[in-house]
Length: 244
Image (cartoon, rainbow, N blue to C red; front, top):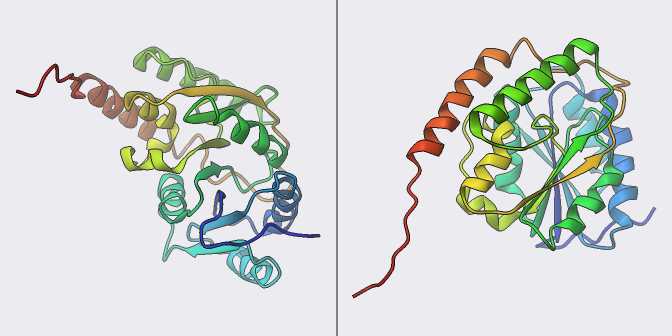
């Protein structure tokens, strides 16, 4: 397989946060290489190891020997999904950045659609049309998403979908705090960026278990929601008419 051309400034950076995903690393990388090669643009794949305790890191390092486009960032311990995403985003070099989960549930073939959409928006986000999750997980997500949108006056269909694409320059205006990755569309809109939504595929998890689930995010999400509402209410919004 012919990979993309690794350059000092690749056009596209794909950021993948992982924790204990040793069984998913290699198959996801192979799918990414196929999908990204079809886009005919220089790319890099940035994996962030969020304190894995299994063989995730060793598998990544082994794959790095074969894939020159693969970069690996290792945290000294587990910091959580927002930190892992932020660590990848701040180290991404591409003009365009794509984020997706490392569990194979996001489909790399959807990346091209989101990247192409950036001609008409600043952030293109996916929403899962057919969730391949447990009933409890789907219902809890629907309730949380509905409440979040009601409280923030937002219309994001699926805030839990990690598959997103955006212009890296937008990061200069976005500051992430713990848990804030779920509110990324709102944070973009608060800065005046245009957001579009697209249906994407969702697949069953084949290896491992979910690391960022219902139990470890419910109460944190409520606190995060209050923080976002505070930012929306207190955000400075003025226009200078003249400079005299």
